[in-house]
Image (cartoon, rainbow, N blue to C red; front, side, top):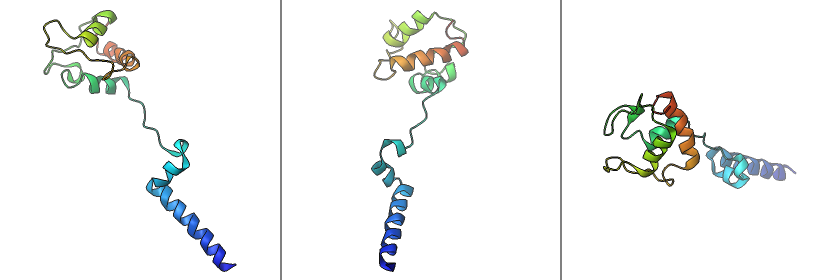
Length: 114
């Protein structure tokens, strides 16, 4: 009897160790795995546009703060780029349409868009 209890605790301890190390969460399924927090509109902007317009300020690209462009014009600039080629188009592969919609809210906060 003592032996079977020892084995039960050994299995319990092994499963606990797997869960603690993260290996067990894969065995328990997706419900046990932690999901990353969704990106905020500001984080989406930083990922897609921040390299050239950090926080909306001038760097490689011009400042976009207080430009007050229309939603249609901003969307066109993002998706098609500029005619002089200075700004390249940002495709849906890099910035999905749902993320673009979220990011437009951020652009309003810095008054890049009306």
